[in-house]
Image (tube, rainbow, N blue to C red; front, side, top):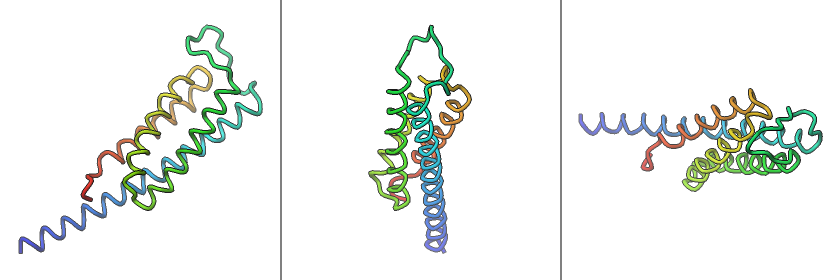
Length: 136
């Protein structure tokens, strides 16, 4: 009887782990697309962003757009690895989500609502990737 109960728990935990990984992959892909579009916006037309003359972290918005574009493409690529449940993708996913949280934090004065939404999405990605145990 104990082996049946242990087996059921193991199956349930594996299903939950797979579900969280897929959840993280979908969120990372969606947030990567949003960052990709945000980068294209900054490269194509700087006037979309609010200008903040007294901001400590001042960047040229075109170069900021390229940073967002590259990070968004990397996030989308890593999310494809997460769909295959690759361990490297989980590690890189946490790292890229952390970098994108920092990037979106630095761009809060330029596009505040979008930055805060993306920070929340990336925080959920980190949570979903870190809560899954390696043996699952």
